[in-house]
Length: 191
Image (spheres, rainbow, N blue to C red):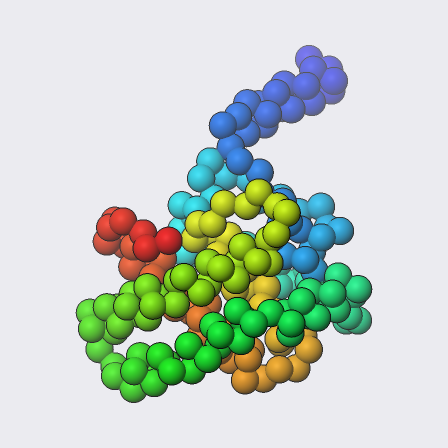
């Protein structure tokens, strides 16, 4: 068998493996990656396990962070971030909620507090998500919501808003904890 037949067989095997998968273009979710040709391909991206999600977003952070200078997409996204009333509202709500979560330390009670905090913030988070994705057909799920919050965390870190960055990082950890608990207990996701 010559090289062409081996290559064609490998190509067909890969294409058949992709059948039924969904490709999510990360540039649609994260403005700073708009010109990067990065796709996440999975049958159900919202069902990615917590380690898979952490790996994906670690790679995104490496790609976006490797550019030292601020791109025009990042500047535009940051201006949009600063103008958004809903982003300010999310951070105000989190500022009120966070002492109740981090003061108490405990297993099951901590999980319940995280879920209650998320349910309280969910309407504002979803409105802000849809505000930032205007004109796009993006379905909200655990993956896209995490990408949205990660983008805000990345922008605030890049532009030096320390307090905002800390709050977005904590919200991101809350989403990860809720996803991990839902994944471990096999209970219905809150997203």
